[in-house]
Structures are given as C-alpha cells and as structure tokens.
Length: 224
Image 1 (tube, rainbow, N blue to C red):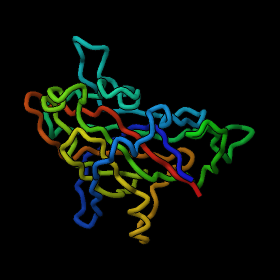
Image 2: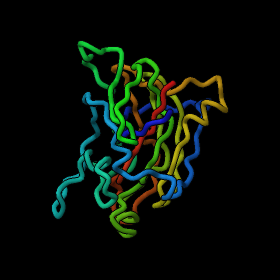
Image 3: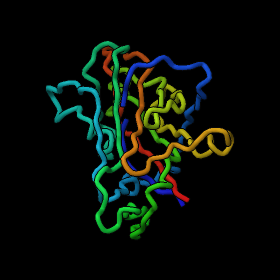
Image 4: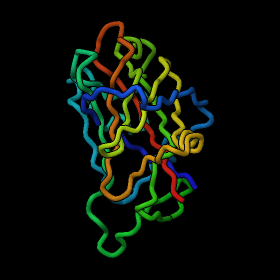
C-alpha cells in the first residue's frame, strides 16, 4: 500500500560520480495527482525540516520553506543566494523521539481518512512530485531560476541524480519503479531518525533573477 506525505529537501557540495544512476522526471497529468488535502498525510510526530536561507520578500508574506508544502502554487520557497551556482538545499529528517508506548510504529491518518500504522524500519520513499519554479504565474516562473538537476542523498549515501524538465507541469520521479527495474539498487529508506537530502547541482537560469524557486514538493512513500 502506498501513502503520500508532504516533505521537503538538504544540501552539501560534492562531486557527483559518473557511475551514479540518473532518473529522468516526467510530466504527471493533473488528474493523476490526488488533491493537496490527500497529500497531507502526517505521522503525528514532528519531522525536522531545514533549508538554506530564503530570499527576503517586500511585497508578500514570505518565501520561507513552509511554502513548499502549503498546497498553494502561488507561494514558493525562493533561495536567498543570487548566484545560481551557490550551495542551496532543503532537508528532511524523520522523527527522532520514540513514542514511549509504541516506539516500533509510526501512526498516521491515510489518504482515505482511516487510522493506520507502519513499522518504522520498513518505511521507504516511492516517488517525488515536484512543481518546479515559482508558479504564481508564467511571468514569475520565467523570472526566477528553476531546478535542473538534484543529487539525492539517503543519510550519507549518494543515491541518484534527478533530472527535471523546464516546465510548469507537475513532474513525477518514480523511485519505486527505478528500484524494481534495478534490483541492485537499495530503496530510499526513511526509518526512525533517517535523513533525506536533495542537493541542487544545476539550474535553468531565470530571465531576471538567479534565485532558485520551488512551489511544491510532494513525497510519496510505501511500506511492505
């Protein structure tokens, strides 16, 4: 059974080995995506998220990290750095403190509204859905830089490189299918206290600004 969860991205500058597999994102039909409310599956335990500094905003509420998973394409996280080659990142870490009574399980409400649980040591990432750039309008999307390539880390292990198209369409990265087709590759595991990192290593330059924008990042996960 698959469940879906909002999460975010982390960054360190590293040389990317030529042997690292590359996964090409592809356009996801709007109808294939569940409503944003359905993606808001939570565990009832706090995920730790962080990012490089966001750009100050004079005429809007903010460009902070929360905008990546607020369900509103008009809002975005936009990096503070004006250099498109600067080290930009977003990170997520699964909950650290165990539930004293049920420390073997994550408890959550699934996308159908039912209470369920998952054993913490078998939780893994199955897919990414990315709305690249600041998608408030076609103009804002063109004005700011968009992500072209991401180096994905699972804890201290380089996992893969993701290549995104330069489009306003939602894009999907099918991690589960990649693992099935490449059985020598491990899953992206996210049990208790593990980290998922996305290192932005290349961008599509903006017409006006080199600050990087991301409107939404949705992460699908699976178990069993």
